[in-house]
Image (cartoon, rainbow, N blue to C red; front, top):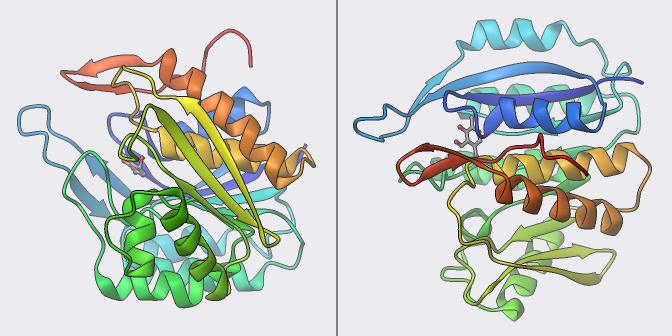
Length: 265
Ligand code: PXL
């Protein structure tokens, strides 16, 4: 089995980021290689998120060790820290010689904090990086940043934004409704091949959801590597992340981590 390549930041609390990605792939018995973009810290006293970017020269060396990408079964991209790092990743993805799934989770905002990326990086993502992906997985806030469409609250608005992103040359889009979407259901919308598919599950009452987005995108990558269709891959990922939240681990007051080690997949 060829490894998947993970390009992501480290979450010190370890619920999300690279750590969530590794645990998810491991759970499906897919080995991984990992490239680190930054380290995210959350001091338990203030709860304020800090992000320490990898020095660019070091990041370039990490990438340079990867060759033309032909040794990988797929690529999962998570948090990219800054514009320079995003540019390096884009150059690397353009050099890939094999046809493998590339899943990009456009981490432009962290739900745990007020952190948000600059408009410059949002622009770069939309114009350059995201068109290189097989599928992207923005949450509502990220979908709004990428589309300039504020306050998404209905399925029709989600669909409109997904179509707009598709017209901007992005192949397939999954918008995650998450806890913010009104109603009792956690709703995700897939726009693919001019077709809309909705995925719904009852919202869980617990707060052990740090890492849910990373786990979801990694699990979609798993499905694509396993040769499943995009619809099957999103369905599998949705059920996986639901169980990971349900079995999550409390960590700080009102913040818990998803856990991929539940009994049956
Ligand atoms: O869940 C989004 C996310 C992505 N990447 C890193 C993170 C987090 C959330 O904590 O720390 C590195």
